[in-house]
Image (cartoon, rainbow, N blue to C red; front, side):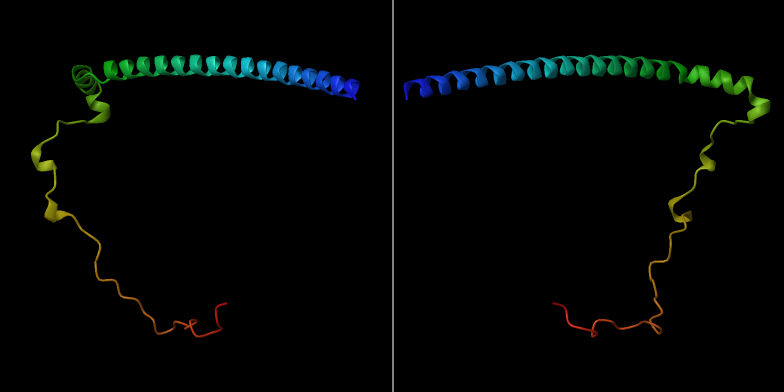
Length: 115
């Protein structure tokens, strides 16, 4: 009886050791994967910051004004004037009173009982 208990205890210890070994490697793999993802996020944020800076540089008003002057004959761009904007009462809104023709409608509410 003692031998069986000793063998079962030894097998349980070996099983727990194998389980702990596997969990250790899973944890190490998860840590490496997390670090890789954090590095990718940092690189993406760096690229985004660089793209925002480039966008701000390219959209400088004086640069755009110069480009519009250089390409005037091709683009025919003119400065905006207040009379080019419309007034709110000039906006055509869709009609609010919707009318449905129900002369050919089929009444299905009285057909059959719901379970």
